[in-house]
Image (cartoon, rainbow, N blue to C red; front, side):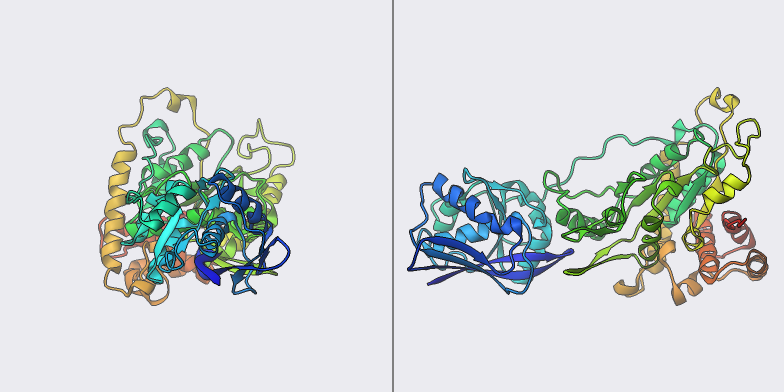
Length: 506
């Protein structure tokens, strides 16, 4: 007899059904796992052996063969432990042969029989619903799996409890969808004194989902401004939260938490490699640009990042997808992010202060800023200079307007955008002005006669690329939404153009 248990292999956030086949035959005692297992899957033999011994069962003195079908697909991860153990229990007649027919199982086994959390439970639960199956998963992740929809979930703490549940002698509690704890009090814009222009740019970026570059000397408040962005962004919709949770689940970031409606805010160190930013590695894991999907990717000290790592962000910023191509894997992760970058104008950071600037100014500034390529600059919608804060500004009382007031205006602008795009098919529907493209952009961002003339003249003088031209229109549309204006006027085009950085070449 061959026992069959269904599980999944992960291909990005997508899943592939895997049939775990267990067979006991006569011959010298052995335990083999075949079907392209990686090291973690091959080591499951010892974890399964120890877990069965912990509940009082010894492996029979037979030839044990475990086949993971289809055999030509690479199998990775420790979540194969539980389906292999369940197949062994069926083959040993410890549980009925038909007990697992309607289940999809995944989980890691401890040597004491406990079922430990694994990555990818939420995508696996979605796959189980698509296959019209119930799900067996670790008890700690039942709340995560419950977000997939209406389905039977057996969230087992250990192997004994699961066996009793399958035999009908003990029923486990039905898990409820679990929410991550609220992020707590976020930094407030009212903490920042001065920098009114930068605050305005931050509000525009939040309202339209635009990319933003902050350039200024050390201590001007660039990182403080970026850290206040989550406090003015609206929470994610249910669809957005599910997309983000799928990515975080595959990356193993939801093991001890539940679904969150707070937008991701990722701030990798400037020493991060290309695989860390875009994704990759031996298992083609998601990178920072995908972990920040539907949220913010903050790159501080932008020119200090490796040139290749920054250039690898160009495609995800334009398409909203990160494609990880390896010899044994070709995986696509969602990567629709809002890029917020900060940098000094030169290596010493004091270009505009003759008393502090180095003797190589302005040559050092040209060399330093040249580390950022023109195509990457072209993908940034808003670029502003953040000057040093004067002592007189620091001694003033806190500003009357904080994150709460700005967030209300941002939410109103986002509501206008949601209503504007609601009639479009879901597959073509942008979520923010920054995502509008093609005919949709032409329909929503047609300036009046004066605005069109200003934009045409400025595009010729500033040598704007087609991408830069369209990004100016998107920012202008957001400015009009903040003004609750259905018409794109000249003043909106003028302000949008003022945020467009022209790369200086030496």
